[in-house]
Image 1 (spheres, rainbow, N blue to C red):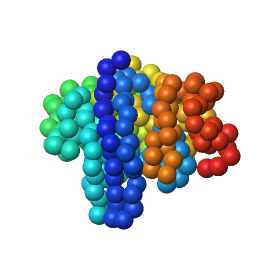
Image 2 (image 1 turned 180 degrees about the horizontal axis):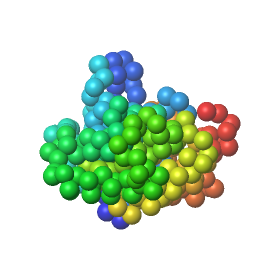
Image 3 (image 1 turned 90 degrees about the vertical axis):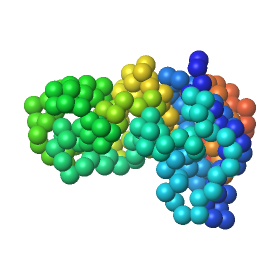
Image 4 (image 1 turned 90 degrees about the horizontal axis):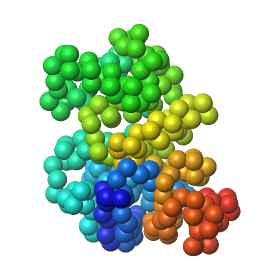
Length: 249
């Protein structure tokens, strides 16, 4: 498989807090990489580094190498980077706009297209997020009238509309019911045919269900990364096994 991200000796500080310590790994194209670990393990800091969202925090400092398709992301135009590497957050964050305009927003921000092409782009993105059939007859209604699970899939559609290469998910199902969670997971599994997906989750069962590979973080360190079935059945490190079995977390 082709390498999408190549990360070497990545270290991150927020003031005196040493958040990530010498992380080295590769993320492959068209895989779902599940990232697990207890609170304050560094997994969200790692995820946010991939589209430079950590740069928005005070006293942020980074050292190491982080390449996307062979390009140093710290030297890329940040808007171009965030177009290539989209992010879906823990809580759905629809804009106070219609369903249509929520999906069209990013496209317009990045230069847009004519009305006919924009309509087709919105329809395509909603279909990719497995939401089209549920909303196609009410595109002009407020996004706030959607259920929580539908709002999360709307945010996925908004991310897809700008045609990224990578989708970052930060606990996307933490506030969703099991049925909505299953729909988001189904969308992930189908989307990996076209996109590279990195999923941070506290739900180890979810990591096992959708991840091709899984990375386990603890206290800012990458403890191990391997095929998901191996991580969950024969991890190399006892701490990984203890976490998966619920002995701490």
